[in-house]
Image (cartoon, rainbow, N blue to C red; front, side, top):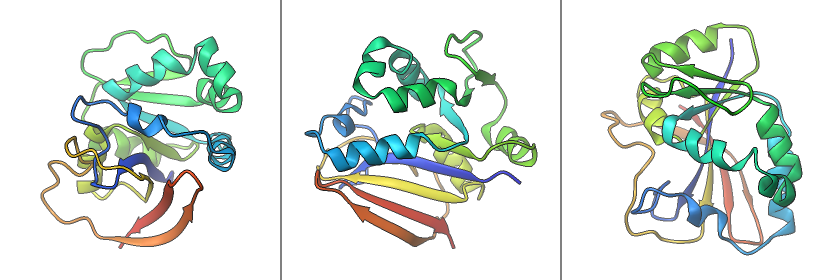
Length: 187
């Protein structure tokens, strides 16, 4: 059975988007060679990606561009090659390579995907997916990058979850730029 993980940047005050709904703040840190190497290595792993429509739009508008290939060539190459699923009721056509649009209920669709043969799955961003999938107990691993800043207002990943999601810390790693990478599993 395929495993499902979640990978997200969050602020110290627990938001994954700012008050305008953007994630720019997570990518505006000063350069850090260790962090860049970690990001490249992380992106070079296998798997398939899951997105909500908004995050998909942000990713699709950046990773296939010459700018992305110049800034982060290893990550751009991998992002463009990986299999991608986008949940949307409104998208009918996509231009980013290796993308499948899923129009059904995320919980039902992810249950199906997890039972199919194939690589493990990772949700990137996409709080609209994290909440229902966490509530349904479908996420096997939670990966957070805690950024050393407070946003004051924004959206949390667990918005709308009606029951407590208990997690156990598996691993941590800190970086010179102040980011802290945390991996949790459900208890």
